[in-house]
Length: 357
Image 1: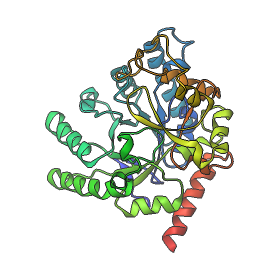
Image 2: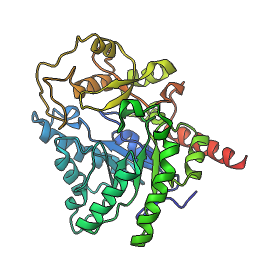
Image 3: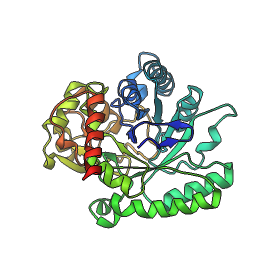
Image 4: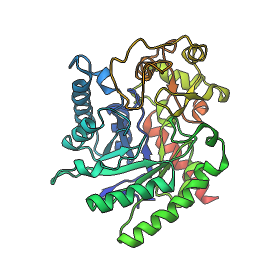
């Protein structure tokens, strides 16, 4: 249980808290998870909206905001703090450079292939680089590119399955297809990475996520060859989560039927909790009249049914007539708000119980 590490970063529990934007996992949640021995992760998606008082310019506010969130998290935490930076962000380069300069312990990067991520490292930087993938093929492409172009081996790899919350790296018809389930994809990735490890005489831990919600689920995934799990939804209903009380209540009040697949303006399917806003989108009543932030490279507001960054920001504040909460497939299981300490303790107790059976 104590052998999970990302490079020289040793973790006492094999749990990575998933990065959740806009504003759901900031310094409050990340530092609490880090203090319990897991990896706490700040999401930088839309962070400029949260720091608009610092600058009216979204790009500048994003840089200042991420810098401040990392400062606060490191002040509060004695553990490992990471940043989730989506490749699809138009300010990807700014966010990566800011995370490295601010000495983030880890950068997790998905929603596209982060093929040039090692190019941003400086001579003295200690930041670990971890790509997020949805297939063994994508992981192999990244490994080969990084090794060939930068002589850099990923410090770990996150495999995100189709039961995850938020944007999914799958076509809509693949989400319910068992051939694309985490349990089907993980053994293939383990074998692929084994080949990379043998060829390069290295160790690349695999972190697997998407729909894992208890200790029993953790054990099943670790038994399949993962070194750790990534979990997001379970941390939303914690006291330390940075979302509004109304956002947390949306999880607690959700039924299994409320958690559904939606079409996102960024061109990917996503999993979210049904809201008045989603109904309004389905009825074609939410048309953006401009693009104030230019936050996502793949988003064309003239063809988009709504502005995603505004929708997620509104949800973060608890306004579900103008937004929605992204959530994993098991988010409806939440029934009360507890601390991060209790959450991790329950997970580890469940894990030990499952291991003893």
